[in-house]
Amino acid sequence: METVNIKIDGKSYSVPKEYTVLEAARSANIEIPTLCYLKDINAIGACRMCVVEIKGARGLQAACVYPVSEGLEVKTNTPMVRHARKVNLELILSNHDRKCLTCVRNQNCELQKLAEELHVDEIRFDGERLEKKVDDLSPSIVRDNNKCILCRRCVAVCKKVQGIGAIDAKNRGFATEIGCTFDLSLADVDCVNCGQCITACPVGALREKDDTEKVWSLLADENKHVIVQTAPAVRVAIGEEFGMPIGTEVTGKMAAALRRLGFAGVYDTDTAADFTIMEEGTELIERLQNGGKLPLITSCSPGWVKFCEHNFPEFLDNLSSAKSPHEMFGALAKSYYAEKLNLDPQDIAVVSIMPCTAKKFEAQREELAVDGVRDVDVVLTVREAARMIKEAGIDFVNLEDEAFDSPFDIASGAGVIFGATGGVMEAALRTVADILTGTDNSEFEYEAVRGTMGVKRAEVKIGDKTLKAAVVSGLANARRLLNAVKDGKESYDFIEVMACPGGCVNGGGQPIHSAKERMKVDIRSERAKGLYHDDAKAQIRKSHQNPIVIKVYEDYLEKPGSEKAHKLLHTHYQKREF
Image (cartoon, rainbow, N blue to C red; front, side, top):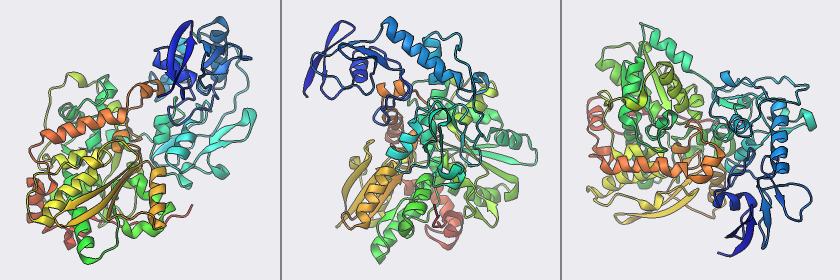
């Protein structure tokens, strides 16, 4: 790697030639404040919080976009620099809705943190403020431009990472704001509800639709049997909301906390993930053996499904008709489970705790109901679930571990890894390989589909057949891959698509970390490690070997792909106009 020699605050450093001043400073543990900067996504020098003095340059320069060069001399902490940063911050705050105590991002806000660090104790530039309408029509995302600081991080994520561009800056000067085309709501454009804009936002201008009051009301209703399920990626993230290290696996504490909230049953969505593999795997085998439409494409990511409906309707027949795991759980809870407990399905309320904001949209789909009974009643993000636990005064960190409730308390390791990109593919391959070969294969860890890369390709040998597979996360990557397939440049038998980069571990409903933290650690990898650790220590590691799955098929569903299984566990999709 080619390097250059520079000086920062009088000290000499050798840094990679491609670095910016900001990257060079942070590699030397010198902190330069930022607001608009987001590593690998947004470096536009708009907020001017990262200004520094450069020897020989006219005026202060934005460190996030200024390239290093041989002999460059930088000063990051001079009276002029400190004054400029403080004035810039005060100007941003002058047009900001400063209702911090009632903001969902209170104490986890980059603007608030900078105001503390730069000792902003008054706003000297208060003037006219434009009151902006809050867009809360989407079932997943609320947009409040009164809190927006025009950093454009949300715009960059939506365009560059997701390849959608549902939002952008509009108007000019003081009237500039972030919005949708023709002043439409997020509910009326091709937004896929993935929530990546929320996790990119440094303030509270974007947040999930809060459904906690719905859940409190259900729990207080004596006529309702309220149960809860938690997705695989939740167990390695919710601890972060209580100050625990990133990626800490807290399954037992999570189950204990939810039980204390008053749920009648606490269940594991991982069990339903095993059912998903049985249905999806059967679908793949049938297509491979009977000349069905290939590639089969996974359908458990609702953001991806809506993206496909908008942008690639020609691939809708390629999508697996299997419902996503939490929707399968809801359908089984209001059929099999209801019969076992002699309950009216109408009296059962299913709450899903998901790492995903798009699941809120998914739960409202008309096609995700059986005989008029909706599969899932309410979806909470990890952040919402944590707020409920805190509101109830539960000491999460010091809870004794507890187990999930029967009958959905046993899951395979394959179900656990659903939360990471490549996990659905690997889980399916473990089962499909055993069924096609008629043996219990001892080699079932498919390393080629693991990791946080945006696109992974693999050729998997199963018996005498070689299955061509691709794994993609992040919708801009999905667009490129599907265009290549459509144009005949690439060919696959099976494709896994996750809307969020890195998969559900990086979902739009997960705990939010600052841009500074995201520069220091790959949060996706740390959370995924916890899932693969759970898989490695699991007694059962293949979905078709889960005794609960076996029993439910024997007693109730007959077999994967049966008429009853199709009624309960499968769905359909629709082309959506822009």
